Length: 192
Image (cartoon, rainbow, N blue to C red; front, side):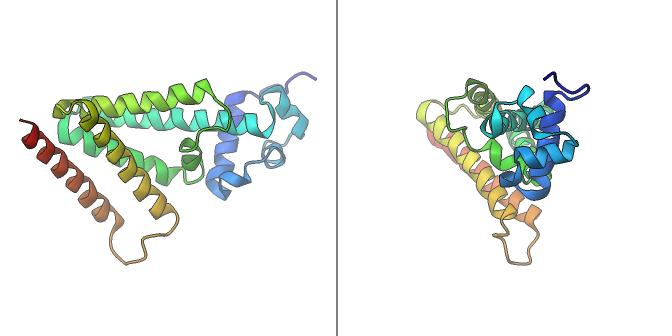
């Protein structure tokens, strides 16, 4: 069976991402995707290797979108401004893609080089954003882990309704990033 005219992998992944964002990651199935694309499920096998193949490609697609947003936000800025821009872009992506975002955080069950390469690009971007602080070795790695944990934790708590108090979430997020930056500056002073 030949692929349907006009049906290609980017179209499939965009439709799958729309399902994920509207209904949740777990609702991305071949049947749901075929229905959205108005095709028969077997047509998808010309582009993806079953549901697990679709989800692997969707995770890579999500990482690519996240990386693009992070790069756009951090081009031309450095220091605290770069960290703030990175953090805001990260949270903005998680908010805009409540179903796609979680799939960017879970590695596929089997080793997937495409996923690993995309995830590594994001880590390398974090390294570049933080390199101006002069942190070295383990201290730099702990700082990267800390930033990733802060961003993911906040995004996940917000998505799951974990912030019940009637306080502005953007204010809370800004305070969190300011506190992180104060910690980096404290590390810098200790190292010099």
